[in-house]
Length: 357
Image (tube, rainbow, N blue to C red; front, side, top):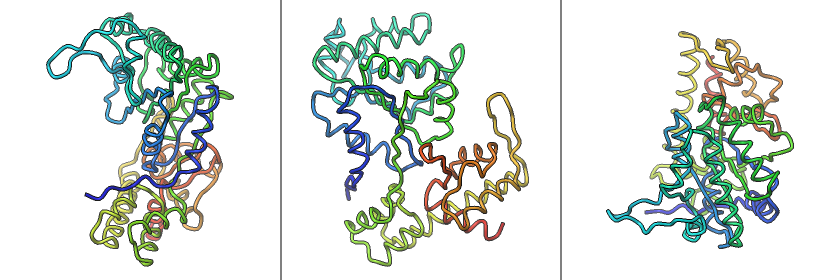
């Protein structure tokens, strides 16, 4: 079985290393287009961290989150049974911390979990986590909290949005107490906007963009897997620097055919999305408003990408922007305030679809 090696990301690794080397002070959003390698980068860095960092890594990708309870359960690793036998009980936070590995959910016993769920209040869970992180600090180590695919909590409410409660807690951990580094990873740029507006994050967060590979990095990556010059050009034309697409090509017996297949699937998806809006109409919820999607507006916006790779957020109406981002056709870069297709593959597909629109 061919193993695809972790490639490059020196700039992003340096940025994260600089953050971890300083006192916790800001929440760090790790953002970027879908499948740009955010999770791969995070897990690779966790593996490389020295033993004096204790990382609590929670990936919400596969979690079904319909309530506060679902979210809280997703955070914790229960100290219960393994192989049919009950683990030896850990009664104190210090005992729990002593057994924490580098990559783990947040350890907890049944006694503590009963407290966490008491009254169904976020403050109970956050109070427990705060005490646990303080115990890690007492042991001479630095706690790091990483929540991957955090946009999954976007619609969870508990007497108001859970987002507000959660990010206020993150602010306490970073800017107020300087206790724990907090990283929130997401490909959903609309979620970042939602968080920023609801949680009062001005001056309390930073953004770290993990984008697709540029052309030079892409070519260097493909050289490692013996791509011919023609195959490299076809890969860039169809897929650009999208890591997940490049891995597909590496693992394919017929790389040219695979690139064409991916292009056809993507262009077909975009064409179908537009056809549905044109023939059946579509709506999107923004706050408390249900808004109509206007087909002519979508076409006008996508035509801008026939000659350009990106556009300003001021060149697109809010309803169309949210729809095209929600459908993973476009991505909003929070650093530059520019909008671009989710990938080179999407850009090529948009140009193909617009030829016949």
